[in-house]
Image (cartoon, rainbow, N blue to C red; front, top):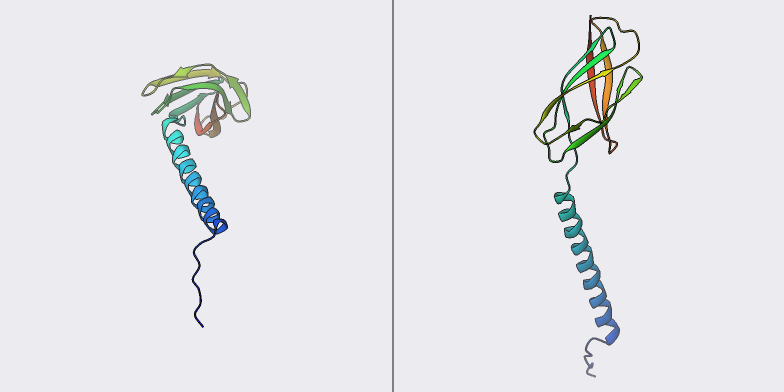
Length: 130
């Protein structure tokens, strides 16, 4: 007795087409999100030096290596906060001076961080000078 071979049914074709469509959408979404992520840059900031004087003056030297301009928001040192609105463009070095209240011991290091308007923070250690 011979068996009769039968071709694919409509349901099998629909399942294969659905699987191919799902894979195509996933690959397309991956390529789209990769492209969008590569066109928008995350801000970066390098703290070159940080000096805190006993009178409360904090002097930061900052460099923005890019790829986007950064807007400073606050600077925290030893639990104290100072606000600033200085903007640093790509490739620019800037000196930021703010006044921080508190008593500081010369020769010690005080931890701090620079917070940008977008919420990103960049830590540093400030040397206390007389």
